Length: 183
Image 1 (tube, rainbow, N blue to C red):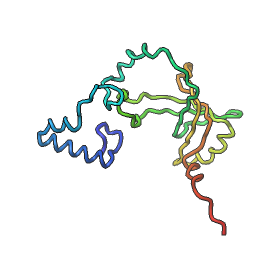
Image 2: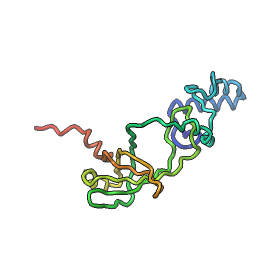
Image 3: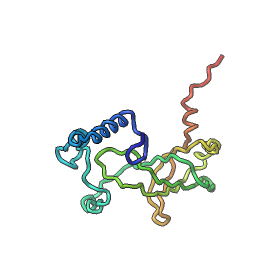
């Protein structure tokens, strides 16, 4: 059974509770359904209340309050996917990947957009790192897994990612396999 928004399959517990909710509604027990599935929070929208009364579309009204930024000492991103056209240059390769969603499962209470905005990433991988994955990624069922530092490239309207660690899912699985026993 899919979730209400159709983005993923429900867990067994989610199927059970969806069934209970449907039965209560069908039997006209709306008061019980509301009491069980929508209990009043102590303070609506309070951190930890599990609900969010704020809407993503209203985020512009929050920004003046956060203009005094703190300092991040490390920022990193993980990208999992397949590259498009890989362009080789002396000492490095680069390619782009687009992410269009769906939204991942996020903690309750966070305001989220109704649709994930498309984001383009321009990825730079050193030649040495690329050589370790170049053969593996030729397999159409394999997927790149890379970590890196990022910033926004305003000129090309993409997030630049400088890869610090590059592998593939197949290489990760192979590394977890115990070595063959010697006879």
